[in-house]
Length: 331
Image (cartoon, rainbow, N blue to C red; front, side, top):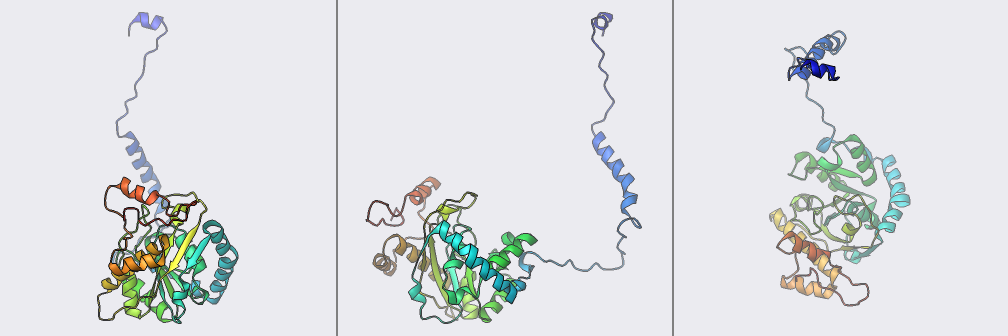
């Protein structure tokens, strides 16, 4: 910089000799100064190298103990909440129409209710419409990695829905033993064999967990189809759009002790698909197609995402027409 520049008012710029890693060096120095404050005797004493550390006690996920939710006090509180608050709210949001209950008239034992899954509203809806003789002693199989990952969520779902954590990615011994004991003690179970909510409205292939539990305990499986909850509260959405729903109960299925549980899982998926066909059309048409093996699959048409969305997006029951549309729309 010349003297003329200085005379014109320009000031020389001073550059500090700062290295690129100065921030990391500063943090390292600060940690070094604070380390004596966090060590013994001011902080936690070091663990002796010759002593084995005790195993960490896990209290969440599949290890969450939900037995307290089935105590007399918790059951009374849950019944009050469900009857006074939850059931009226579900009816206000979902306006359910329930059919097929007569198919369960001959049952007088604990059962496994297995339903399709498209919304977080499915479990509260079913808990509010399942007949009283099972609803009072009903537990919900909840995904351990989703509903039991924090203490607040675990306690909330255990109390409100009597939820029990299960491993949905594989068969867990802890989950299997817990569910088997409850079924053998006289409790009924609500489970969603798809393992999670539908991402696009169409069903997903069933897993064999429900069928395996039915075969192990000898309890019948009641197929259930739910229609309309995704339009009210879809996966990934936080907005609720009140609407109408239909819950259809099917004839119970029995497991063959000598057969592969996957055979029962296929029968269950076909039974729920037939109930969906019955909801969209009528009982007689659905029975004919089920007998002929032409019931439309719950998984929807093959093809691009836009075609599947288009096939699902059309209204199934025109408001100004008595003509019953076929389901799904490519059938």
